[in-house]
Structures are given as C-alpha cells and as structure tokens.
Amino acid sequence: MTLACIACNQPLKPAGNRALLCTCRGEAESGDLTCPEQHYVCETCRVTTSTSLILRTCIASTAREPSALADLLMKHPTKDRAGPGHRLIVAAVLFAPWRNAGLPGISKANLGLALRHASRPPLDACASSWICHLPNLEA
Image 1 (cartoon, rainbow, N blue to C red):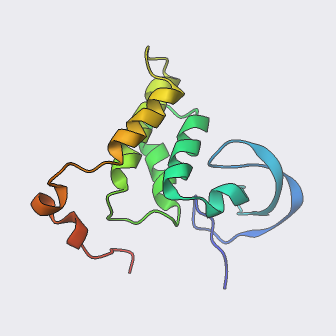
Image 2 (cartoon, rainbow, N blue to C red):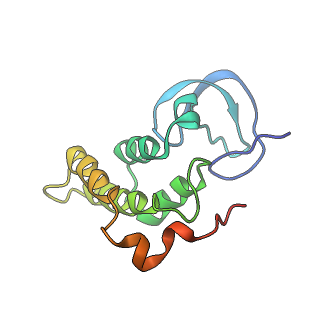
C-alpha cells in the first residue's frame, strides 16, 4: 500500500528526518514523509479531528484566496465529501483570508466563534434538506 499526499495525492517518500514545513499549520519540524512537490503534513494534522484541523490550518494560514484554502482542507481524509462539516469549511475559508487582508474586526477569536456558530445546524436542516440521508460520495 502506498501512502498519498493529502495536498496533491502523489505518493509519499521517506524524507530522511529533515526539517519540513507542515502544509496545514505552517510550522517547521523534523519530518519523515514528503511527496515530490515537497508537501509535508505533520503527525498532529494527520490524525486530528476535522474541526481541529480546520481551525489550526486557518489560524496559521497566510492565504488571501478562499478557494485554495478550501481545496487544501477538502483533501484531508477526515473530511467527508457530503456532510454537514462543510459549513465549518465555508466559515473558516472566508474568515482567514479576510483576516489576512487586514479587515477590521476579524481576529483568531472571531474565527473560533464563527466555527462554533457554523457547527450548529439550523433547526430544521435535516427535515428540509435531507442532508442526513445523502449517500457518502466517497464510497
């Protein structure tokens, strides 16, 4: 079995325990696996929950383009492709670039608050949209 890069889906190769920058959090550490594009995802980001990954990635992000950030988050294996967790990605990938662009009133604390609000579905979301009954598109 070949492990694939979360960011680009290319096969991972041993990196020889050298300093690598985590593609999600942007922090440097001694890494063990990287892809030909030099993407590296640290152990913390590889095994975290999707909510934690979204928060950590968006806090560390310097991106000003929401679609690039959304694309990275959607590739992580903890994300289901058709679940209610997508509300979190929408909130996070809008807030992070706004913060990075220097919009007043947008802070890390606001991002956490936006994720908390986005994690609560509208009261009749399942009844009106049937989102809970959609098949898993990854299967």
